[in-house]
Length: 328
Image (cartoon, rainbow, N blue to C red; front, side, top):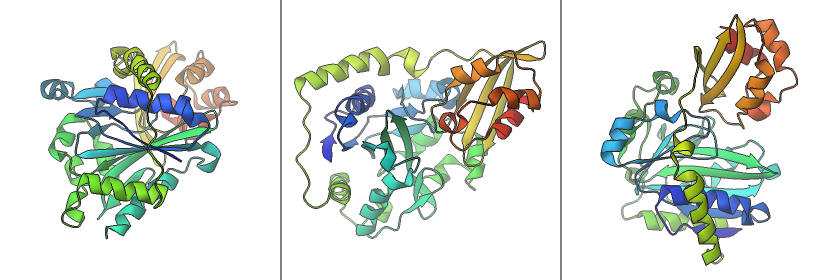
């Protein structure tokens, strides 16, 4: 397994670096990367950034917003947060996010911290989340990435993100701030972020750590080009606000939050856009094409959904549940 630490804390560069590594060396070799971003909100691939982000606050605070390739919810990064990325063969991982969370829990166990893998994509200590995880899959490969709140400014987390009330309540807590925690209070005195990085790297790579994978000048130029063409653009990070006549919003157990923006004319669907913190490819174009012209009746919607690979598009979401959400 190759080992890499990003040389920068620019979020646009780091998201571009992840994609570049996945598309190139990651197609044939397993890779583990550690990286950090200066003050940033990273939104999931399928999220409506305008709704997820407190735009006035992030503008005042100089917090950047960037969209990642994977699904899931929005997260806040600062230099008190550590990010990790695995790239591997997808057949070894399937849809199991827990597989890549285990080295983090194991590393903390070595430091005397009892971490637990919780829910669909969290790692917790004392029931409070310090790590969120997501995956992107393509061409038989998987990119799994996660956050580790080591010593982040948790007050900013609560103010920068517009977290829906039902998502907070589904975790059995009253606020974002009470749901998350930093690791530092649970670690032995004197364990710095750099020291923790070493423990985590050993947990993943073994005692005989390979030499770091070094980016050549050509790699850096390619990453910079991808940064400028995608990750630093308004179109990728914010995009256009959805056009709709009907808005449906639902939290589905085991799936996540779904926001459906429907164009309805004469009792039939004429367009559909999908946002949310779900996992999967979320191919709204294929879904919209299948449903265009469909009457807003549950049986008709179910028939229109036949033949679509909903498991690939929206992990754990069945056709009957989706049909009920659309017509309810």
